[in-house]
Length: 310
Ligand SMILES: O=C(O)CCC(=O)C(=O)O
Image 1 (tube, rainbow, N blue to C red):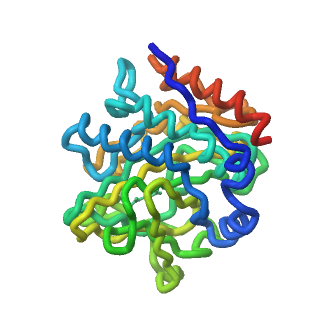
Image 2 (image 1 turned 45 degrees about the horizontal axis):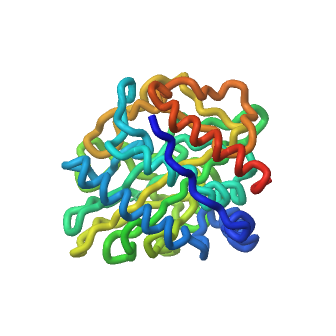
């Protein structure tokens, strides 16, 4: 299999993707919208690649899971065209942003395309991302450190259902989530217990294509339905501190998202994308059937970025 090129990184992007003030906002609020986005060339690549994924994978639902994995023998999730999405997942600007926010040793452990069609795109119920059973705190750590980077593919604003965050809502950690299997108006079948969350403070994450928001595992976030006349698509990748554990011991995750299909979280491939693995239990072999070209790309990128983002 041919190995595609990896994106260049400018010294400026390496050092200043996320400013000190933005790191402080992330620590305080649980999310941040950095001023800097992807460069123009990478943004064009992002838009063209996601557009091609929609064309080549007809009937796309509102959530496309693991779009950075190509459809290949042995893979249970993924898309036609996942190779190019993978290049975005290890993009130096995104890795540099995650490094500033959660540290120098990073595992990329998942991703989605949230593609809400014009007029019919469903809401995302208010939730925290810590409900995910796969990401566990490493030994001696109070909670896991993971950052979800949500990159706008379309112009995303209040009218087409941008993501919304409640600043500081994760300060006290995990909140109960209430499951409602009869619910069909949202892309999830659970919602955070709303008592004690001040939704009046919710902030709209309005973004131009190529710009991104970053959020932690505890901040409460959600999105209104897309009742506008334009699509609202975003691509998201999840990066965790390599001192924490991607825990495969729970088996398959319960059905939760749209279509209520169980997510085979325990069988998914994960990649070390920066620094060194700090937790011997992290398993980088499971789920990597027929992905040697992506593994080689991620490794070349990691070795190149290590001295630049140390
Ligand atoms: O885009 C959306 O509506 C949901 C995104 C989300 O919940 C997430 O990235 O954690």
